[in-house]
Image (cartoon, rainbow, N blue to C red; front, side, top):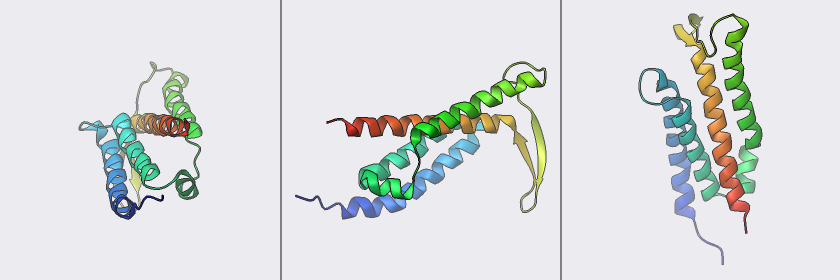
Length: 140
Protein backbone atom coordinates (compact mmCIF):
# COMPACT_ATOMS: atom_id res chain seq x y z
CA UNK A 1 0.00 0.00 0.00
CA UNK A 2 1.37 3.39 -0.99
CA UNK A 3 1.22 6.09 1.67
CA UNK A 4 -0.41 9.35 0.58
CA UNK A 5 1.92 12.06 1.86
CA UNK A 6 0.73 15.05 -0.16
CA UNK A 7 0.40 17.24 2.93
CA UNK A 8 3.92 16.38 4.15
CA UNK A 9 5.47 17.13 0.76
CA UNK A 10 3.55 20.38 0.34
CA UNK A 11 4.48 21.66 3.79
CA UNK A 12 8.09 20.52 3.33
CA UNK A 13 8.51 22.68 0.23
CA UNK A 14 7.76 25.81 2.26
CA UNK A 15 9.32 24.81 5.56
CA UNK A 16 12.67 23.69 4.12
CA UNK A 17 13.22 27.15 2.65
CA UNK A 18 12.54 28.70 6.06
CA UNK A 19 14.79 26.20 7.86
CA UNK A 20 17.69 26.73 5.43
CA UNK A 21 17.32 30.51 5.68
CA UNK A 22 17.38 30.28 9.48
CA UNK A 23 20.49 28.09 9.29
CA UNK A 24 22.33 30.64 7.17
CA UNK A 25 21.22 33.44 9.50
CA UNK A 26 22.45 31.54 12.56
CA UNK A 27 25.75 30.87 10.82
CA UNK A 28 26.39 34.55 10.14
CA UNK A 29 25.00 35.75 13.48
CA UNK A 30 27.52 33.65 15.37
CA UNK A 31 30.05 36.44 15.88
CA UNK A 32 27.78 38.88 17.66
CA UNK A 33 24.96 36.70 18.99
CA UNK A 34 24.36 33.02 19.80
CA UNK A 35 24.97 30.88 16.77
CA UNK A 36 27.85 30.04 14.52
CA UNK A 37 29.05 27.11 12.49
CA UNK A 38 27.87 24.34 14.78
CA UNK A 39 24.28 25.42 15.36
CA UNK A 40 23.97 26.73 11.80
CA UNK A 41 25.18 23.37 10.51
CA UNK A 42 22.69 21.51 12.70
CA UNK A 43 19.80 23.61 11.43
CA UNK A 44 20.93 23.18 7.80
CA UNK A 45 21.23 19.42 8.33
CA UNK A 46 17.73 19.30 9.84
CA UNK A 47 16.34 20.89 6.67
CA UNK A 48 18.11 18.31 4.52
CA UNK A 49 16.90 15.46 6.74
CA UNK A 50 13.35 16.79 6.40
CA UNK A 51 13.73 16.52 2.62
CA UNK A 52 14.84 12.90 3.02
CA UNK A 53 11.81 12.20 5.20
CA UNK A 54 9.32 13.76 2.81
CA UNK A 55 10.81 12.38 -0.41
CA UNK A 56 12.78 9.26 -1.15
CA UNK A 57 16.57 9.16 -1.24
CA UNK A 58 16.81 8.97 -5.03
CA UNK A 59 14.66 12.09 -5.51
CA UNK A 60 16.72 14.14 -3.07
CA UNK A 61 19.98 12.91 -4.62
CA UNK A 62 18.79 14.12 -8.03
CA UNK A 63 18.30 17.63 -6.62
CA UNK A 64 21.36 17.55 -4.33
CA UNK A 65 23.99 15.25 -5.85
CA UNK A 66 26.40 15.58 -2.90
CA UNK A 67 28.35 12.86 -1.19
CA UNK A 68 27.97 14.06 2.38
CA UNK A 69 31.08 12.17 3.48
CA UNK A 70 33.06 14.39 1.12
CA UNK A 71 31.21 17.46 2.44
CA UNK A 72 32.32 16.53 5.97
CA UNK A 73 35.89 15.96 4.80
CA UNK A 74 35.93 19.32 3.01
CA UNK A 75 34.70 20.98 6.20
CA UNK A 76 37.44 19.37 8.29
CA UNK A 77 40.07 20.41 5.74
CA UNK A 78 38.74 23.97 5.70
CA UNK A 79 38.67 24.28 9.49
CA UNK A 80 42.10 22.74 10.04
CA UNK A 81 43.54 24.66 7.09
CA UNK A 82 42.43 27.90 8.68
CA UNK A 83 43.91 26.84 12.01
CA UNK A 84 47.22 25.71 10.54
CA UNK A 85 47.38 28.76 8.25
CA UNK A 86 48.15 30.95 11.23
CA UNK A 87 51.42 29.06 11.76
CA UNK A 88 52.69 30.22 8.35
CA UNK A 89 52.47 33.84 9.52
CA UNK A 90 54.39 33.17 12.75
CA UNK A 91 51.41 33.86 15.02
CA UNK A 92 49.88 31.56 17.65
CA UNK A 93 47.73 28.62 16.56
CA UNK A 94 44.12 29.58 15.64
CA UNK A 95 44.89 33.30 15.62
CA UNK A 96 42.31 35.24 13.65
CA UNK A 97 42.69 38.32 11.51
CA UNK A 98 40.11 40.89 10.50
CA UNK A 99 39.95 43.22 7.52
CA UNK A 100 37.46 45.26 5.54
CA UNK A 101 36.65 44.49 1.91
CA UNK A 102 34.86 46.81 -0.51
CA UNK A 103 32.03 44.79 -2.07
CA UNK A 104 30.48 46.52 -5.11
CA UNK A 105 26.78 46.36 -4.16
CA UNK A 106 27.00 46.22 -0.37
CA UNK A 107 29.89 48.63 0.17
CA UNK A 108 32.55 48.11 2.81
CA UNK A 109 32.10 44.86 4.75
CA UNK A 110 34.11 43.30 7.53
CA UNK A 111 35.74 39.94 6.87
CA UNK A 112 37.39 37.67 9.40
CA UNK A 113 39.20 34.36 9.09
CA UNK A 114 36.86 33.06 11.79
CA UNK A 115 34.14 32.99 9.13
CA UNK A 116 36.19 30.50 7.10
CA UNK A 117 36.76 28.37 10.21
CA UNK A 118 33.05 28.45 11.06
CA UNK A 119 32.18 27.48 7.47
CA UNK A 120 34.40 24.44 7.91
CA UNK A 121 32.63 23.56 11.15
CA UNK A 122 29.21 23.99 9.49
CA UNK A 123 30.15 21.79 6.52
CA UNK A 124 31.53 19.15 8.88
CA UNK A 125 28.36 19.11 10.98
CA UNK A 126 26.09 18.94 7.92
CA UNK A 127 28.14 16.14 6.38
CA UNK A 128 28.33 14.07 9.55
CA UNK A 129 24.68 14.46 10.57
CA UNK A 130 23.29 13.64 7.11
CA UNK A 131 25.71 10.71 6.74
CA UNK A 132 24.60 9.30 10.10
CA UNK A 133 20.91 9.66 9.21
CA UNK A 134 21.44 8.02 5.81
CA UNK A 135 23.42 5.19 7.41
CA UNK A 136 20.66 4.57 9.94
CA UNK A 137 18.02 4.57 7.19
CA UNK A 138 19.92 1.90 5.23
CA UNK A 139 19.84 -0.60 8.11
CA UNK A 140 17.28 -3.33 7.76
